[in-house]
Image (cartoon, helix red, strand yellow):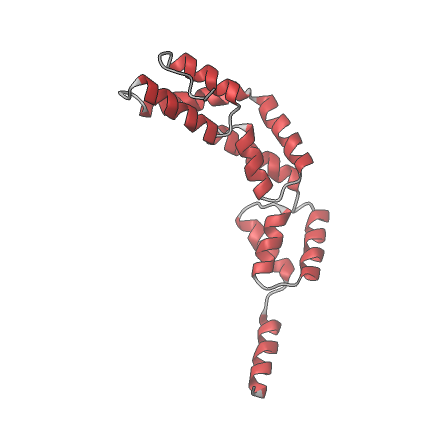
Length: 173
């Protein structure tokens, strides 16, 4: 290996932006959880120690707050996309949010708006697409749609019975 190769690598590390600046730029583009930011910095080649110090500094400066991020993100997803608590919990877990924060967030989000009303709104929108479909098929598709959205089975059954009264229950015995 030539000596020029080692000079190039030292020059590249000298030109690499400070992880603090990179983290601020990433957070300026969109809010993210602590774990998402760690992953993004690691993908850019920063070591664990500088990442940990940047995360600690951002948390102390309140630029990074998993609880606030989870509340804002879940409230937005619940209301705009009509998602249920199970789906929101799964997505928050994927973003690295702690279980305690997830529970508190879901209690707050669905304390403001009833889970059933969110499911009802989603069902009404889906039923527009199901017009002209046989009742049994519509009921099955509505149930599957609401299940993918993360709503509890008892709400799904009640809405299927209400909006597609003819046909069998979509959940097996």
